[in-house]
Length: 174
Image (cartoon, rainbow, N blue to C red; front, side, top):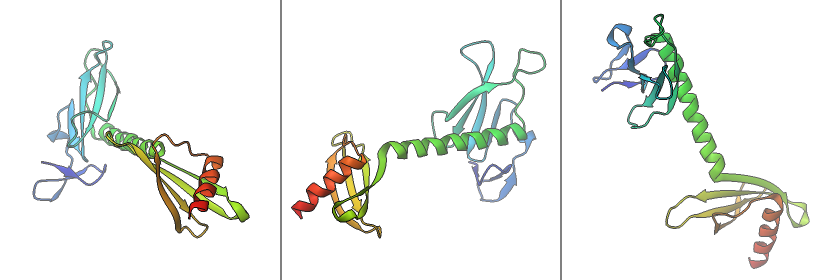
């Protein structure tokens, strides 16, 4: 099994030795390397072609996009080292954006002023548990130290005002 370091046209063989991704070792419609498999497929929606990028170890492609027709206007253009490197870079960027988006959905943070004018940062981290969805609300002082942490409903709406109210209500309980 090939594992790869990055998108630099280099891969590791089973012994861990670095070797180049050689075009002559690749199929015109299927390239492997850099942790990815690029496969040119028939586009289901029209007469054209598409390319799918699947990360090693995954069953579903991370990226599917249109692929260029060859000179005969019937068959796909063969994959080459340059196109493969571009596809790997694009697929890695798509995965990075997906991780960033998922984090944005599960983590929110606001800063608010509390009684006496002190500023605190309030973080809401959603725990998407199927059986017990909830969130953790964490209050940090100006130095970044945790001053309060509590479990709240997963649908807690974190705004500057709701954070300020929550901090004031819970400060009275301490």
